[in-house]
Length: 441
Image (tube, rainbow, N blue to C red; front, side, top):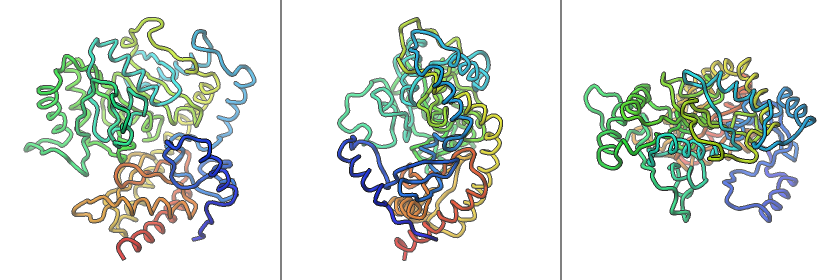
């Protein structure tokens, strides 16, 4: 397989300019400098072609520069670009109506438009406190909910996100996320692991740390993203929903990465047979335009005028892009995510059989994690090997991203074809083989 010469001279020059002027806090990986993209294909400034199986961290849901999304952006930009949320415009009303149609709970929905995932989470935190008149929350280990002061109080995937930023927002207690591959708790006889986690929450956290009548909500990713693309066992969410109902606690599903069709359903939580009270969304919502939303049962949206707002939320261009995105996902890409996702999981299972460094392949739809280990029995994370695989794949024309301790996430655009999966997995398997030879001999 052809090895690309990276970074090329144009990319190298831009990276040097970037380092002179941009914050060093951004978590840059390999030296990819994008020039343009179409669908799942992208090209760097030196003309090198890549397959994008990261999709801007699951953002480019309809592929790069889908003609219908581009047209929606251009049409709206020719009318007006901005009107603040002090006033009205029909495009964001139409978008809120679409949210009402696809919301994962019964009854009418109400939406608050934002600019990002972390802002959606901040809005959910504030609304939950206001509506319940309770101050406390329960989050989960391994979670990623953003980096602003409220959201990062819930984030528990990497300590670096909090280093030298304390004190953060108070009132957050963390519970274990039900990871079937790396369980932290012991089950009782006949008990599922998800049920064991919920029992631990009730018997230890609610009984010993924070009383349930003080808890406004559980904030949880239905499938953990940054934490390792971890899919909880099927018994977890029904047990958690039952616990929420018992104590009047809101269930807040962070669908920023897992939503908008990525799992083959509009929202990942729909795969587990329960209804949340609030969801947060962003990333794949508008095919790359900066837009997020908090969507809730209408009765929960009880705060008064002026209690929360923003300037750019519901930007008309972003809303137009989102409407086009939702139409495309509904018409074509929900089904494609399911079909191509199953095809990818099957292909990765075959690769796993040939490579002992793969401990587990997991996921739903096109939200797939490949976990690398030093030994399948001990499950010791192979962090350096995973990092080498990401770099080796990049050098051969495949963009991927790591997550968790030693996981590579497979999150291409929802428009990705089976032939593009075939090409990408050929590159990935070559990278795995080379990394295994380096680390295992």
